Structures are given as C-alpha cells and as structure tokens.
Length: 181
Ligand SMILES: Nc1nc2c(ncn2[C@@H]2O[C@H](COP(=O)(O)OP(=O)(O)OP(=O)(O)O)[C@@H](O)[C@H]2O)c(=O)[nH]1
Ligand SMILES: [Mg+2]
Image (tube, rainbow, N blue to C red; front, top):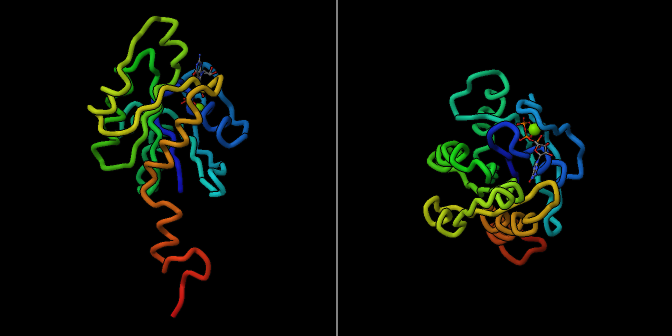
C-alpha cells in the first residue's frame, strides 16, 4: 500500500509525513517549503506502507517546477491512496484540487486539516454531508497535535484499493504457502 499526500502549499502535508513516518522533513509556515518529493515508511497493522510527501500544488496543471513534481508523482502512483490535505479554515480553496483528483478516478481520502484553526474561527463543516457530496471519506485532523490521525489511518486502510488480505486470498487462499503449481 502506498499513500501520496497532495494539497495546496502550507496546509500541513509535511507535518502529516513526519507524524506518520517519524521522519523530520522541513515544515514551516511558508508556502513552498517542500520543493521535491520525499518517501518514507510507516507500519499499519504489520503491513509496510510507503508514504510520499510532495510540494504543494494548486491544480493538476503545473505552473512551476515544484507543482510539476507533485503532478508527476500523482501520475506515477496510480495505485496509491491519495490523501488530499485541505485547510479546514479555508476549505473552498482546496476542494477544487480534491475534486480534480477524485474525477481522475484515484482512491482519495480527504483530510480536513487545521481543524483547530477552523474551530477557533467558529467555522462549522458538515463532515458527513461533504462525504456524501464528494463520495469519499472525509476526516477532520489537527496535524500538530495528532488529533484525528487514528481515524485517518483507519479510513485509509478501508479505502486502499489492494488490501494485503486480498493479495493472499487471490494467490490461493490460506495465508501460508499460498502459491502452488
Ligand atoms: N494550527 C495548526 N497548524 C498546523 C496544522 N498542520 C500544520 N500546521 C502548521 O502549518 C504550517 C505548514 O505546515 P507544512 O507541513 O510545512 O505544510 P506543507 O503543506 O507541507 O507546505 P508546502 O511544503 O509548502 O506545500 C506549519 O507551520 C505547521 O506547523 C494544524 O492542524 N493546525
Ligand atoms: Mg511540505
């Protein structure tokens, strides 16, 4: 299983990456902090999962080198789960990108990050309604504190197009010594 983090600049993707992998890539309060992709690993219930952090992008039509890196990574990783990270305090800005990715047929989980900021601003978001409209899981998160991450990981696992159990089953069932003949 592979997870690709996509979203506008400065929405918290690198904080996600660090929190999930235990890595320490640079994060800062400047849009355009990440300029290249970075791969890391995390373990989900005994399974190795690759996680990819990319520069922020506003759309799937790249306007500069950094955006090109993100769009290329998306195209090269058709089989991944795309976690679309949105700033919940400015949700309408990120929705366009999320829709673009959903429309291309990717497996998407939307993270409404900066949930703490949205709450401070008294912004109310109907998460279930948004899930119905988008047709994908939507999870509120606060990356700096880790709030919502347990649910995020569980929704990613559910959404994953190829599950490890299915690989075992399709290889002949049983689990051990699955391939014969
Ligand atoms: N309050 C709050 N701040 C957050 C949250 N998530 C990230 N931040 C802060 O937002 C800023 C941007 O975080 P990054 O992880 O560097 O953002 P990014 O999406 O990787 O940005 P680019 O690399 O420019 O695309 C940092 O100052 C983070 O500490 C959150 O949930 N709540
Ligand atoms: Mg970054």
